[in-house]
Length: 301
Image (cartoon, rainbow, N blue to C red; front, side, top):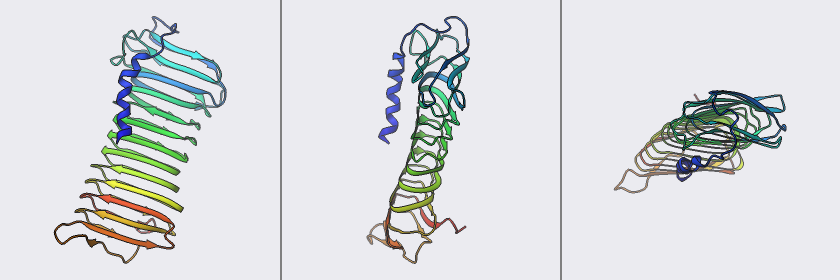
């Protein structure tokens, strides 16, 4: 879970939001726009409140919303290729609650940072990288690379992206509709990944149920780890993979073959299960401590 804790470094970094002449020094509402390229890079920072980013068909970026008490203004500058947006304050700004709604070209590439900030992105087809500490993250529609991480809050992504990285320490994590490569992790909360054909999947949870539903392409790898959460794999047919399952005290329900889990030692409850289906092209590895493991095809209810 080391990658999740990088979010904590943002608490120090956000105090360094660039100090430029504010768009609105005294007023608490904002409504401004700038021309932008179809694939403009947009950097957004708001330490507290909400950030909502919506894709549209115009080649411009528009910011509307409300700045919270204590904000000194809005940074909104840059050219057609890159635009910076941020809530300005004399200090770190963690106690300032601002609401920003930002329209961007659908092909925009986003980098979004928050602290106590809920973040939502819809209908943006470019890459998305968003981080918060105390706030939920939701994104949908992206076809580019997606990276969403928070400490306290849920993380949800839905879309056809072919490379997704998502994580939360305390919250539910969900990925729907993706394919290609996915990396998802949580400590306290369920983790669910459902989608198309995957080349690589890395899934980690500690105290939440882990569910994966998808197809593994030739040569794919799927690694799933859990401490006390149950693990369920629903694989699309035809299944063609080598399986290696290890659990200390959890049950193993294998509905893909007749192979049964066997005790590793007469002195412990530890069990292992190794078998192949088809030619064994893909590699599936599952490890749990006390969580149960279920393997089946999507056709089985």
